[in-house]
Image (cartoon, rainbow, N blue to C red; front, side, top):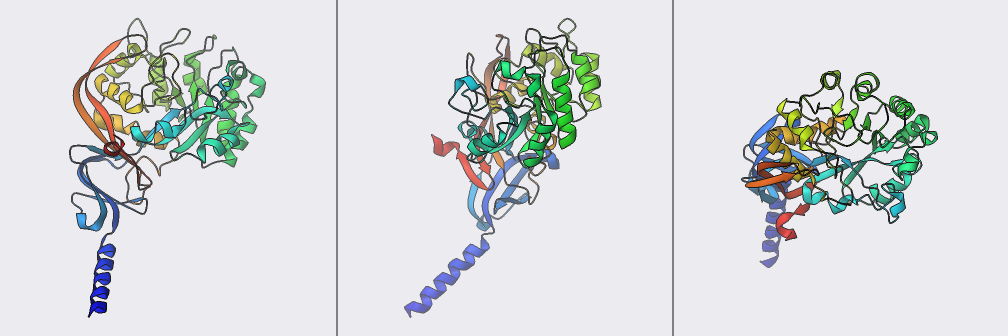
Length: 405
């Protein structure tokens, strides 16, 4: 009598397991997926690392694990399009295998980020080492803009060496690693030649990838208007767009507080504007008049790296500042999910389409009085703050705030 009962019990358990179609079911959250124009209270099902479905109601019995997301946002895993991740022990190497970069796993998952894009820390000489040491060993998905300087961001004197800026060799490296390198980075050049940009454009054209350009530390006579209107191509990215630094030509006229005409024209042409917040690369004196004029950045990013003088802000805190500046929640989410995914030509990311990679961030928007400061001391009052409750990457829970306390 015992054997048939045991067999019956096993068959019952097998039926129960088979009935569980989903690994994870996220119930009752406010789903915002700009890539699919979804904005409402819905359930999200995950199976085998992919999005299995989104509907108003999905049976809990069909899932092995159910997450109650009522009162929270459920969005695609965040993409930080401007970070520095090539960490190494040598402070003399700066961002390129040096201590000014940060290991991505140290900051990404706890802030809802599933994908980071390194912004030019390595060049064609060091990218294979970067891939081996950081990309291949990180739980965070790591992509990269390749620096036009062969030595990458190894330090100022290296980044001024126009002889080390080789568009052809850079393009060859991009073509060798098309799944990881998403574009070309030009940064920190102080000279008077357009050669660095010309080499970067040459590399981008050969490899068919966009450029990310940091013109914020330029103290040469090179013209921002010429850069944006005559040199950059549609789809290229101008980062640190709201910086106000000595020697920089700003996008907002400091007298009239208006966006310069040629900046509007470049945006209409297809030039993309990225925040690249950093320690000193963002100022409310530029961002507020821009947002008030409906000049929104295409992407919001952190420029995450090791802290020197000031507090480094994480991506949710920066997103909260843009709420205070007047951008609504959906538009903020779009600028850290679908927009960056499109800009780097990785449309498998940044959305919750059925069959897409199951990268998901569950966020709380806390209502509280908060004062935001930029590095100049300018302050802005806010009333809402993004906080990450849970991060799911490729269908696996990689961060749970409740379990991390």
